[in-house]
Length: 289
Image (cartoon, rainbow, N blue to C red; front, side, top):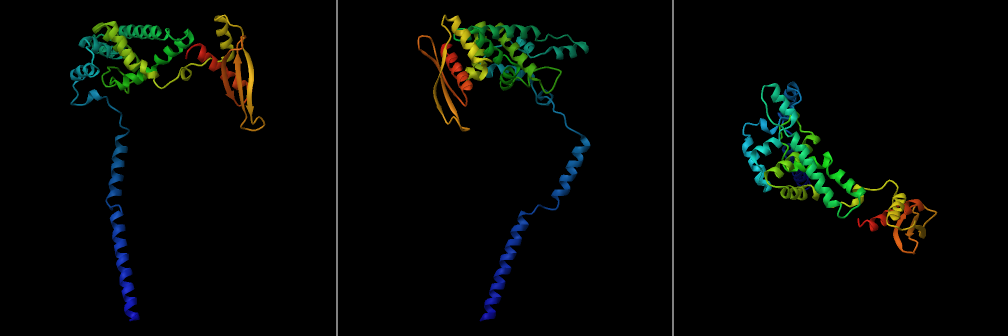
């Protein structure tokens, strides 16, 4: 009986080992995988680094269809020839000129589009903000990084004719400006302004003014602002403090006008920081930011 039990246990263990080995075999990488990967790497190294190629180099590329679809996708009625010219940059036109072909490029449209964008943004922002804030917001929205971001997500990257590839941010930004001018000439100024509002102005969504603009010295800026409004200099008062002798020190400073009206309030780990924070709060209130 004892021998039978031992033999049964042995058989049971052998069965478990067999199942375990089978499972390992299922998980193991086949012998042909490593040689195949080495061969693929050898061939790739022999070819060298593959350079990216523009979408227009693909066999199934249909430029006319893509240009037509661009306007329809955005719900805009572009003049076909104006839209094509807006997508041709001077560098590409110069290459074609060396080959004996004369084509129009978008330099004039870029200037016109830039003017339309700046005038519209200034008109919109000046209704609400001071000149300093308006200039900062315009500078942010007309930067190459923001304009190229919009142009890229509108699908302009593959439609642009330029001598460079990949397309640089400045080229994408200029193309967006040219598109605005092409839309204004194709339809009207109001339509191009609505396009700016729908695709460029919305890039401020989720941001505050102080994310983009902040005076270098909030206290001096507030003093100058109060002088322009005919108000005397403010008075700073320490309203509260806690844990002053620890690393968690916190101070609360309030700024008051001569008639004891609270202009702004701020907090900080020291009095100077709290005062600057309070000055920013006062600027926010006075400028309706």
